[in-house]
Length: 189
Image (tube, rainbow, N blue to C red):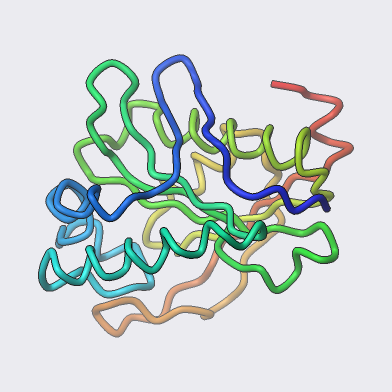
């Protein structure tokens, strides 16, 4: 895999760009402090905008590392920030394998934005970074996230039983999707 890092991506309706510390207040208000979003993510919702600022300041510095692939997603016409998408784990990158994770504010759900952003990241990782396999997981209490993966051209691999405990202490299965470079080249969405 070619480690060329994060670069701006555009779709019909979205801009995916590097995160800046200045994005923290809007991110905090739109998803980082949301009780609804908190149910479906592994991290704890942010208790203050300072938490978001500190995280974004750290993430901004990580862009110097060309193995960092992390975008904030904004609406192209209004520049409103709606969420983030990234290569969530670097553990397998030297094998050309990337785990993708994403999070969006609830007011942006069910509009096709998450699928649009995921397709752009898939395209970038395969066509420009020469990745071999991309995968993503979702908790069984959030099947809509699995639908985003399916609509983005990924193939359902199966269920990883009892792998996560949600914020309410309930054990959840993880659904897993992936797409290989060969599958992508056949579909070229």
